[in-house]
Image (cartoon, rainbow, N blue to C red; front, side):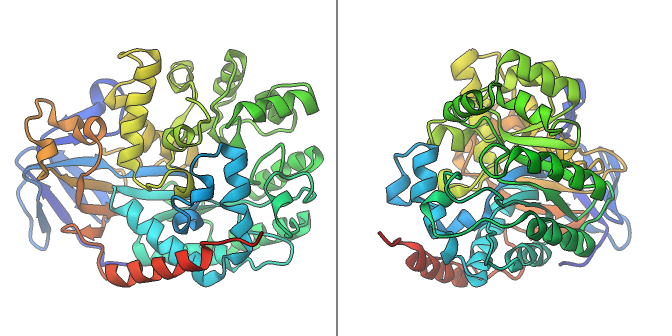
Length: 462
């Protein structure tokens, strides 16, 4: 991790704050960072002795993106041919689950390094990874190595400790493998260990642990779902899982439990401001009201939902109702890109295509991907650019011809999307991308390791 130093960011074209309404734009102000926090935001600030000055001419400053749902191990599973034209269930059965037992700690490390580098180079400063590489006879080492990788990159990291506790025959993924799910004691024991070793219960935590069974309907019996909620809250940990990603998910819940998915999790104490769900694509108006009334959040993953044909989540309706909304890139095995800029661009476009041009604004999307992410993760000191907040920010260069000719240049990353260059990125005031480069990262070595990893994962046994 790089040395903490005081920094002055000079002359940006525009600063977006992550806030809502009139406060979404700060103008072309300079930003002074002292002891890792934003100390001043004003035009014409003068450099002080010992400060590092970053020239941000022809650049934009955004809050660092907060990615609230990811599967980092999938960075070695991009564009697997068997799954390219499958829906979620077919994709699960043909891409990640048949390869789970191939993921050694070394392959997991290679995938995590690749994924975190890609996130940083799109402007992400916080990543919540829904990690479910756990089974009865496997290692728990892969969770620890994710924290190690985050330390290496200087990234804020939230481990959503996943896994399944259901019988192999009932779980749609495990049914395609010879692996056996964990026991409750195994899962809870490791969560307690991880909490003791890594978890920080502060608003600008660098490390968090979350209780996150893979799905509430398929991954564990309902009685254990409630027990895990009690365990999480007893430990002071948040809760996360997938919900209502496809219509099949809704149908299963209706047929087996005679209720809608949000009603099902409500019965088992999985609603509240300490809970957020990935996807939430297929919700009824009453379910949206339940989420809003309880302060339960969502992680919107529009690219993966489009790629798998899962549908378009009713995010504008959720946002209007008061549901905390955030953005996630999901796993790149169902996205092929770990870019939050790409996710933001898709989020801006996809709801307009379905609901009309007023459905989303660029400012909305920036808020979801920054302050919204901080809210669902419980990180109150990050996510916005304001005096006193932790200095988690990204400086985008606008040298690509794509960004020439703009009238409103402040929204360029969201409305134009990739390619866009991260010139500098700060996490808690530490420079983690410096003049377009991640310090110490050997790209050629990473390329070679990724290629070798793909060779090991390319084929599965019949």
